[in-house]
Image (cartoon, rainbow over all chains, first blue to last red; front, side, top):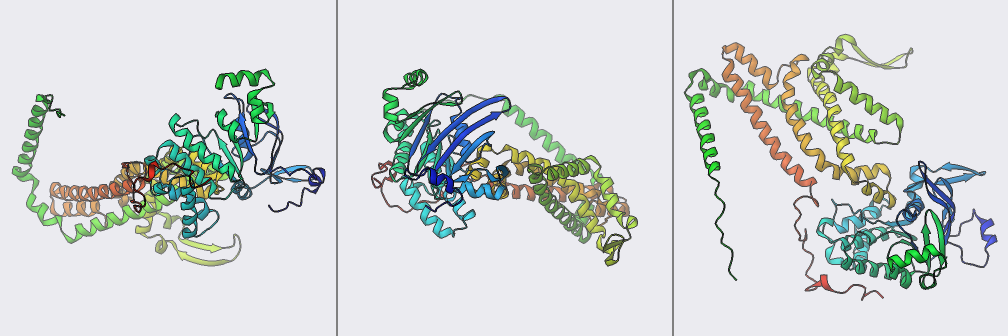
Length: 270
Length: 302
């Protein structure tokens, strides 16, 4: 990882522990009068799989969307790889980044959506090579080679020339994961990646995510799959009503939740 | 296994309806062929007349070039309308308001008389020296005036059609593309517009066919080589308006039919991946494994 030079104060503050890849500090989000996020603090270390669970409306998806600027923050800071997301801070004053700078930040962050959002007019392969060829200006041949590798990894090399409408939901989601990975991000965000899938298709997608986690990818996963959290997660965060209620080792929290709201939620989903 | 061989429901009224329609068609053909006032001989004389064929050519030139201008402007206007830049949004809105809000005939009259308003087009410093100048009449001749007039007017209508098309694309597409780090202009051009085209093509085909007929208004410029003007002129010369109206109608119908065939192929192109997709590969991948779909995934990963 390249060394960030402009936050030497922080480096000095945490000399021993691994520097976090994602730092979320006091994040608030309002939609009009609706206070969705009420001061979220969270860190994710490189290679960590951070799972966020919580009832719908708890703000977990909003938090995820704030990390790659699909939503703008109302207050607080988010740093990814020591880069302040969305702004430039000069003498304590924030300046909006322009669209080009925002696009550059997003390239480091892959996102997988609940509803896949594959480009329906492009085949699986064309979906995967779109960003590398258009954004990173890779040659089509090189991008194709890499894309076929990624499709192989998600078990879909035989589906390269299929359009999304010819694929099952689970297959579409795996193509979407390959598409995000094609940009070689250092962080992957998953926004309820299996919630729109038929139950028998969930396993394939989780399997791909598990392998991705094993390969050392840093992941933030918003999900209702408690089994995935227990098996793959390094940390589990339970959110409710726009705040982090409880956070820690997934196996401990699931086995022995400390907060009654966590207990209540887990009893309903398990 | 016994295949079902059911007796279908009878539809006797369909046969009655078909008989009635057939009768009407026969009567219409009979009246048109036997009524001497249609002057089919004159129709045959003029339908492939050089002047008429040239008129068809000019009508096509006017239709195609004004539509090209209109489509280019409409894409620009629709993008501007969706832009973050308030100036773009405002300019686009005013453009549509003006060109949709005034009659096309009036606009054609204006373009025809722009040479009277501004005899010379001058490039120079305001209140300073002239750098270049042209005679307006040579730059904006009747053809240019007709094409520009029709194109600018049409761009306002098409801009709304394009805007509707862009709006019809799911917001998730923009989010997915932006999350990949694509710039907004690139997202619009490569992701949103191609999908919007499915919705945009049918009404644009409609507008194109409408434009074909609207070209007959270019006599306001005045432009005097298009199909309607030529056939009208021939009608006044021969004192036989009906057969020459038939000549014009025949050619408009022919061009419309050709345009409809073109539209079919354009629709098919932009419908790829969405309309009429088979549950089969587009291009059959090399037959590597017998049944690779069912192979367990992740085995080769670990």
